[in-house]
Image 1 (tube, rainbow, N blue to C red):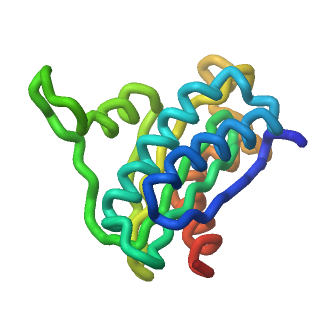
Image 2 (image 1 turned 90 degrees about the vertical axis):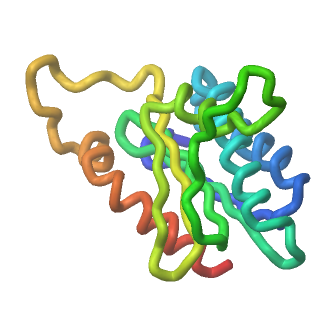
Length: 170
């Protein structure tokens, strides 16, 4: 499969077991796309975002979370949806704290990350990671608006809308 435009998603019951399944899913998708250079970072970011989504739901019966991986331009996007409104925050903890550093890891490993709160409810927390081996745009020039770069320029809005549309059927 060509990795350009590749998309894969998984819907999970919001239980602690979902985190391990999300890691397996991310690794399988990246291997099938031939994106193994980014595998460790993507698996860790997906794990942290799914952990936060599962915790946000309170692991209540019937609640679901979803994870979507998507290639757009020179980036890979990890998008995690849950049905709980709110904005996750990066915690600034003491050095001896035993947890709570998930978003610090996400911040350190990604180009950028953010939150989309769709009108239909819940939230999508997304993260962008660079794809190794995809050429940079020409130096000093504006990248051509071909399929590989057009997707990147529109990613902020389009990726959230597509993720939301795909997940509305939950």
